[in-house]
Image (cartoon, rainbow, N blue to C red; front, side, top):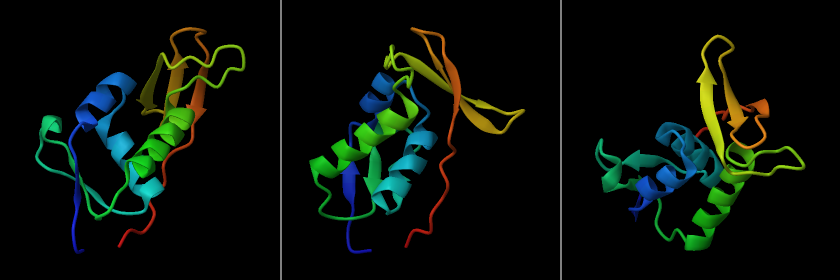
Length: 116
């Protein structure tokens, strides 16, 4: 790979979304179709997107899609972003619970795609 882009404020985003870093990273890799690496073990140091010329619009679209699938309540009369996502180890599936309307649903797992 020729270059990489440093995504520095990923920690702030994860705090706002209240989501697992590995879950977002797996989604982002699949959505953007390239590898992402942690700069260090500390989120404050950000992630490396293993591609040059990443535009802010690419990141914004990825975040929007992630929120639609894994953050925003899908209940028609609710649509709250105040949700919790946790892994149900018995069923081996991710479960999202809305803190506003208390709706629970299982969300689709993120499948790995082959990344170069």
